[in-house]
Image 1 (cartoon, rainbow, N blue to C red):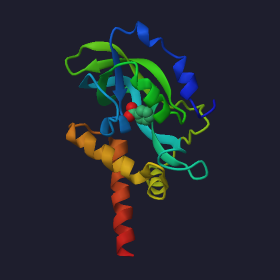
Image 2 (image 1 turned 135 degrees about the vertical axis):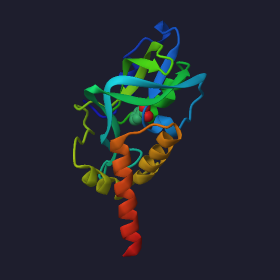
Image 3 (image 1 turned 120 degrees about the vertical axis):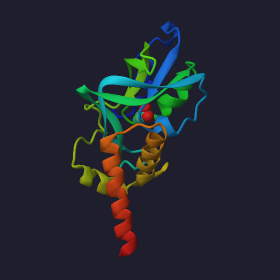
Image 4 (image 1 turned 180 degrees about the vertical axis):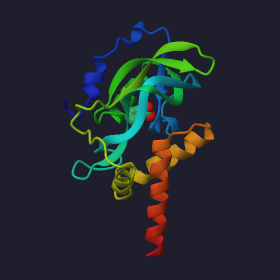
Length: 193
Ligand code: BEZ
């Protein structure tokens, strides 16, 4: 699959059929809300887990030296906690452009803290997209992130901002926090050399 998914996403859902549009954020959408929202609430989705397995050619890396950013990976026994935003359909022009590097919009059930469940949307970069990098050890992923930067800034900033935002929401993600710990260690080692 081509890694520019902007045009494909336009054809994926008929947003006018949604009574309300709720978008689930699990990564940069948690700490960078650069679009108008009508409401927001913590929520989770079932059967998915965060992994820094997607290459970033346009934000935290370049086509020659991609960074590593999040996607969601199927994990039947896991729950991914994040933030759900109620939005109007106009925001998708902006978001489909922002997340065009391999991410497709999928429909999913969002579960709110009240246990109310509603159909929503989530951007996921599937394994068959051209920018997908796949697994590596958390130390290797952190080393890669430590050495990457792109038009949106240093790749490590993505991880550090997300980890901080998750803590502010009282959320725990062992993968994100392990990579944050490695990044802090690399930073200390760099300063001591
Ligand atoms: C998110 O935060 O939900 C998100 C992460 C990566 C790409 C698109 C959206």
